[in-house]
Length: 281
Ligand SMILES: C[S@@+](CC[C@H](N)C(=O)[O-])C[C@H]1O[C@@H](n2cnc3c(N)ncnc32)[C@H](O)[C@@H]1O
Image (tube, rainbow, N blue to C red; front, side, top):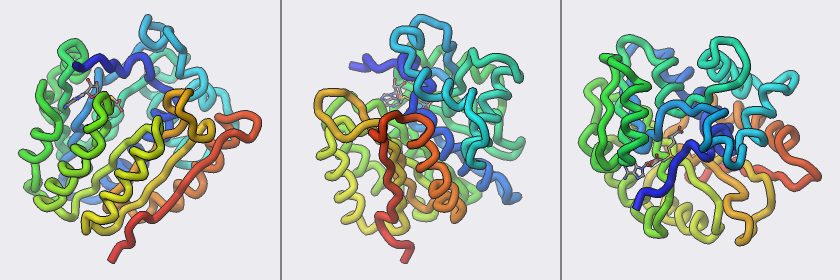
């Protein structure tokens, strides 16, 4: 299977939301002295050349990161994310787009550890080269869910988990919920961030319902859509579901989501959702 390559989508509107949330959570979680275990179950290639053949095919970044490169005053969380992308581009023109592994590598401290999983053989090679010999980082060519279970609970009882599958098979949605429930049993106080695409709304409704029924507490959902739901236009919207989010995330998203709608969508077609799916207690 494994036909998905993130290089075709790097820096698109979905990455913008996902990585803004990720950067915000990392900023918050590295403030405490204790080491943080960062686990990226579906890591991708690490970094993407926006002038390369994959990104150039549909130039999805044109309606994502490129728009933020040009825009004026930004919400704090967006500005912080763009700052990280500028850092990767050494302050110059936008040529490289950092994936979640490179964002985490750039922001983590010497005491933190990053565990990356990538199944696609070519993207695994790119990822390994991208991370070079950083002793804080382990890169595995293995199933991210199996890797996740083996890494929980973390020794210092602090973890940020990013679950960002390619959803190539219909069953992925149910599989993901089962894996989250299992991970949460092993380590209930971890922060878990799950990315989802809206291609068929029913799948997301079912996933939300399954999470609500799972008994897991403190779940927030943030979604940004370019167009209303449709079964003909591929991914029209995408979101993040975060279990045990930093308390600062909600306010950051209250500021960020309407701004993304205004900045990235035209003719009033965009929308957002910000919801407490399950209460804290
Ligand atoms: C959406 S991309 C990841 C993007 C990356 N997290 C980022 O934000 O830059 C999903 C990746 O998961 C990989 N993948 C698919 N199934 C996997 C599995 N079971 N375990 C690990 N990686 C997998 C795909 O090859 C693809 O590169």
